[in-house]
Image (cartoon, rainbow, N blue to C red; front, side, top):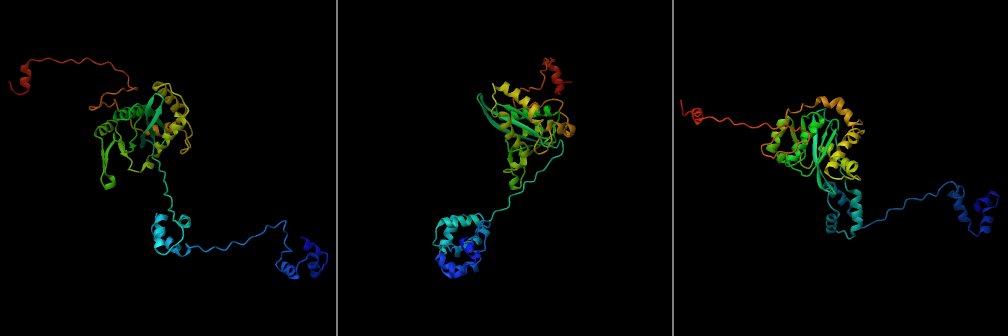
Amino acid sequence: MLLRHYLEQGLTKSALADKLGISRDTIHRWIREGDLNRDLDKQPVRYKPRPPVATKLDPFKEIIRTRLERYPELSAVRLLDEIRAAGYTGGYTQLKEYVRAVRPRPEPEAVVRFETPPGKQAQVDFAEFRFPFGKRFALLVVLAFSRLLWLRFFPRQDMRTLLVGLEEAFQYFGGVPQELLFDQMKAVVTKDFRLDGGSLVHNAEFLRFAAHWDFTPRACRPYRAKTKGKVERPIRYVRENFVYAREFLGDLDLDHQRLVWLDSKANVRIHRTTGERPRERFEREEKVALKPLAPRPYYSLVLEPAYRPYEAQKPKLPVTVERRPLVIYDRIAGGGA
């Protein structure tokens, strides 16, 4: 700034060099490079990029890239052994940083959201919860189209719980979807040979139950839980919005609060995926698409009778046995005239 001030006043370069105690060559160089013409108050100083510093890893970078292109998951430890055999004498840290920078990253697998038509499918799953009064298993059933949710807590996770819960869910929906999608729960699927080109082996008792209610049981493929996302996400929703920070006096209070929550919160909120209220979407499009309820509940021949909360208590009729003479039975069996 001082040099520019003196030059503007008309001082010669020689006089200016004597006045400031610097050489004339320095002043000529500053003028030639434009340093005296740059407005230092408005333009930031520009630095040139630092020239790269050669490292011991440079001769082996092409080997590393080639190996990673062929084997993207090859670890830096394995690569260290390989390039050391080729003459590398450097350390592990610079290799690890370089591998992290150049390792090929596969494109994330696209998750394709698929929607099912009304009445086509419901998704079913269990979730474990712990309360002060004990462990409970929540059975969730979600209609895939409307996202209408049914939920109930049980003390056990077994076949009888599943059958009773599904019948109550059907009563809640007022109908039965065409198919129910499960994970690999043993109450539905005993064996799955699909990864080996085979097929599913269903639980025989559950097949009888499905035939009674006229739906098709389906199971997710192993390690493909994303196909059942419409019920996986509600499990987290139940944990965070219903169970968390609530107090329950016991099973009766838990059951009462879950019914109130289903009708006043879960099924009347704006669903983030559909942008609609599940109850309204169900009433408008899905309710009429469900199959009718079976005329009577399913009674298992292998399981003990279970309490059915929706079923009215019916008076039991006395069983009468007609007594006949032995000659009648002998005649029926073909032993008499």
